[in-house]
Image (cartoon, rainbow, N blue to C red; front, side):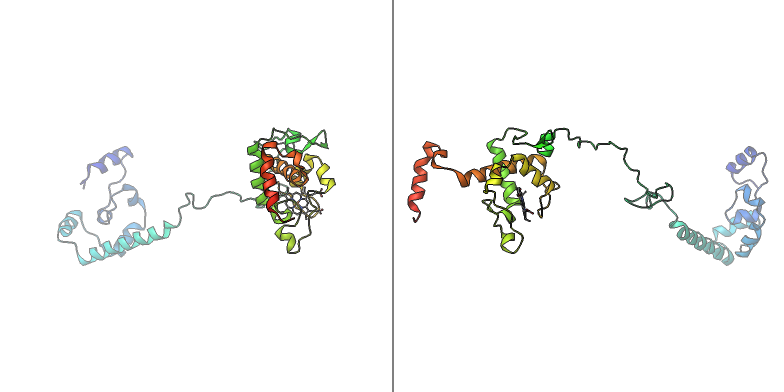
Length: 266
Ligand code: HEC
């Protein structure tokens, strides 16, 4: 029986494949390949479909089918649902990504590391720090007393802000080394106003912030090099503030200074 034109075309294309067996059609399997599969007829019969010719099936279909056929259909649906559930978890997509996490070992390379060491001499983008003064505070390997860029009032303001944030807990607001942490037992840092530190080149302050000094840890990871220079400049301001004479105050400001002094108990 040829109820579908589509089947005819396929049969021709595949070089005259055998026509579908009637009982297979009843199970909804009209694809010629299945006819060749041995167990199918048995399986369909086991579902209770029985063997019937297509015309008979068509008339029964209109009436809703025999009870056996209804059971067979239900069994089909249950089987399909079970298969769908079974294979639902088989999707890979990007749920699992075949990749190595940082520091994960591997057996692929001899050294057992999954990441490759960088080629010697490699410099990360933006990390080529050729300016010796700016990044080390030194010139030809010697601590310098120069700033790598001109210091403006804005730089000093920024330096004061950064100093107050990062350094005052230990060095206090005037730089005498009596910060709140020290008052609670941390080893006291030297005052910035001792002669040795007043005479120290400005590069020394940059160096202390960049590499740490004795029991003081480095601030390199927290303060950008430019800001370290601004803090160093502000330390110079603090040093001047504790050693200034009246002559250092501009004449226009001096009357104000005298007023302040007059208000203070002698
Ligand atoms: C947690 C406390 C602490 C903080 C915060 C701190 N320091 Fe210090 N600093 C010290 C101590 C302690 C020393 C003395 C270290 C030693 O001699 O072993 C010191 C020493 C120094 C010295 C003197 C080095 C010398 O030649 O004797 C400088 C300059 C200095 N700090 C700058 C800074 C600056 C700038 C900051 C802020 C960016 C800062 N420190 C933040 C604890 C601190």
